[in-house]
Length: 378
Image 1 (cartoon, helix red, strand yellow):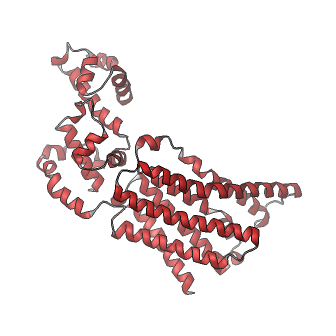
Image 2 (cartoon, rainbow, N blue to C red):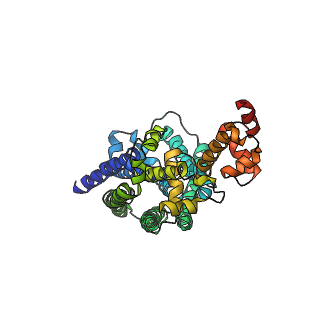
Image 3 (cartoon, rainbow, N blue to C red):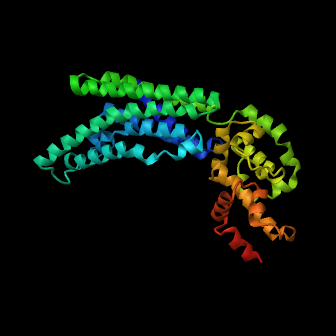
């Protein structure tokens, strides 16, 4: 009784924590949503364990559809996506996130197809079909043996791209704990399968470990502010670094995208400072401008620069800067003072490094070539 109560508390806490991460603007980022999904998955696995202890499927047979799905396949996928969404955009862009859900999809389809026979009696699988399912089950086992250890190890490999040392330490700790739990679960299942080992007591211990992950994530993520930005840093930023933005009334009132002003998260605070650098200091006209230079001006890491821009605008760093350059080009084209300038000269003046990048960016932002735009405003 005490044991299941403890599990139920962890399940409830996991659901609340996951919703908090997803819904609260304080934790809003692409990477953190995968952490929320990871916590939801742990809660579902713990709930299935409670169902098994209470033999709930004996009273509600349809619960077997949920129990028989190997939700554990989602854990390494969400953990990996959490890691790569905190690193450089160029590294993240080469990853095909949907591929990491293939083992889970395969497992779910296989088990549901089998349960439609043994649970609902919707149809009866003939003898050859049972043999086929056994073969598919063997493939399922091979997938588990390969996939579950591989993806956490690959996550360790990808962490080297993470630049914030404090953040890296926290993520490595989380990755190590979850990976250890996954490996222990896999070894326990294999022992039960091949050596007829009674795994119930070991599974109970692993369930307790899973609850501790939920509690620990809540403590570190909420109270220690590892998922959110440090409260003191935000306070200092508000009182010092952003003084300029509050004295510049015109900037505050005319920041058109409402999403930029809807919440005062740390991401938005740094983003407002970046907006000032672009609007007032015209840093985009520097054709050597890169994330490293912007990070130095903002006093944050280069990876965090990309994260801020992606979180607030949904775009990457290059597209965000090029938008300012394109707007500058459009203003110069409309200005009679630049009438005798060539379009390429105007583009280079705005910060583009070559004709190719200029024309490509202009077309992407406006849907027109510079020549087409120039002709349209005459």
